[in-house]
Length: 302
Image (cartoon, rainbow, N blue to C red; front, top):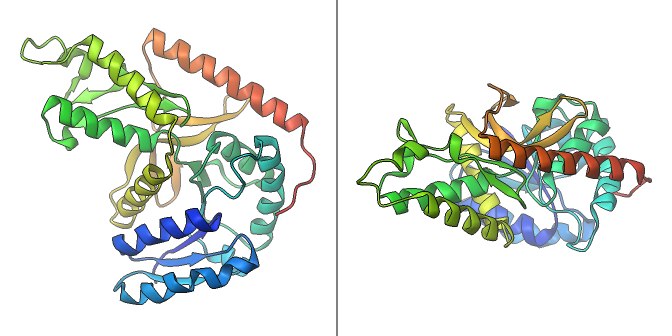
């Protein structure tokens, strides 16, 4: 029996993601649940096209399908102008709905503000921390990996790039980035390396600029990569958004194992002094945002 991937989000994003899945043709039962009932007929062309996929099936589902989900992928459900507090209020109602319908799979946030939504989804649902995660900085880490490989003239598999924090304000952890077996900072000491500390700074600024652009395509590609890894029993260590339970609890992107059970912490994050200071400042801001939103909560609507 194939695992079930449920997709929910606004029509434009959901349809784009489904098109990518049709090309990937993963061995999945894919179920799209429209945000609004009127959107259901709009998916029909994609359902018809899925007949050409030998491995993937696609259908339009309803709330009863939540109980069958292996993964429930939440794309952006709100308008770009919607403030995070309103998104969280709506999320409360949505979490009640999926739990009432027997949801026991992994809940994956694949849109904006995933650090806040991951935290509040856990807070509202009572689900295990390992079941709830977001794509975080993993899409940007992949982008950096490919850029470094090109710049250094090595294969992509030789690069282990570490990017932590949040998708809108990524922190490149150069102290945790490797080229083959060597830390990249040691690699810079090689006289033959046409790459120096200034290049690292420029690349950090470049990635931060990219973080301010539309990441939706990067997110979809990154999610498909994680699904492929899980379906082939080759789980990845990836910087996805996950719950950190040191008080007060927060969610941020750090390297964890992503597998069929969800996310699993392997070791404590060790950064350089400057990187740790930047990460700590970001976490302080995240905790303040959580406290502010928690104090603004009113009943939303799904």
